[in-house]
Length: 114
Length: 111
Image (cartoon, rainbow over all chains, first blue to last red; front, side, top):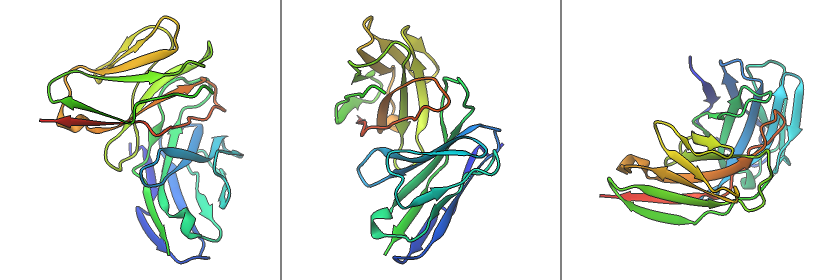
């Protein structure tokens, strides 16, 4: 049982490049989300999904796209990377529905945009 | 969702109890109080949550005041490995709810 797996762990991009951060969970969780964390700051919600085929925006969605074609996967796409998107990105999941328990986080993906 | 207020930083001696306060004066009746922590730059880790009663698990205790406007997370015997940023979050228990993190309290446990 791997939990929440994020790839890659580290990535360096040039301004204007595109890339996809991958997130997969093997716990059959309905709810998945992406956060970003800038140095010295708390986590800010980018996008989230309450089930396959359903996504919604969080606090800071601009510059990011998501899709949820399967329960297991929730990729985050940067279409045209900007230096302001340099951050650590965390993916999280939970069973969803009226579940009141915990979010399970991945170990993070560290992105630098030059 | 209700906002929370936490001190920016706290110190605690190893072996002593660490008491981390959180103010959530605008909490509504169906909102739970959650605590997470983040050690160094790892992914946040769930600690405990509660609605109105005090809660205890193997990691910590959560004390919620009777009016639910504040709470305290207690680490009974802090160790150096408890040095982390601790987040207090108020959340409604619905599947469309969004867990919103603030800046948290940086707890430094010293020898």
